[in-house]
Length: 153
Image (cartoon, rainbow, N blue to C red):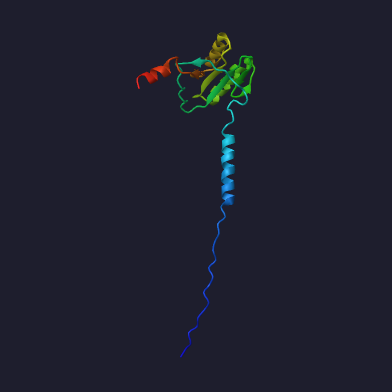
């Protein structure tokens, strides 16, 4: 006859997952994307665009890149964020037009810029051959629009 052999029960190893490093990494990612998402597109330039109650969002260019042309009240002219002299603008625009035939230009002129300067920019852009030109404005609600919205409810 054989004897029964009893063995001591084995201890099971418990796996402990420490999620503290995971939470730390998630918080760092949240902070990074929050800070990175607040940068201004034009850098530190504060533009005072004219108000308009009838402005509509510009249609996106089909395949071309949008070219941004900024004119400040102080007379500074920026092409895609880089300062440029007015005499160089035509040549640079023609170069951009050659690289980007479907592109469109958006002119951002501050409120205090003379009308004649904006017309000169329009002429320069059209002479360079860009098919689409947009003027940037800030859309505001017409006076009394809130009263009209609430009156019918």
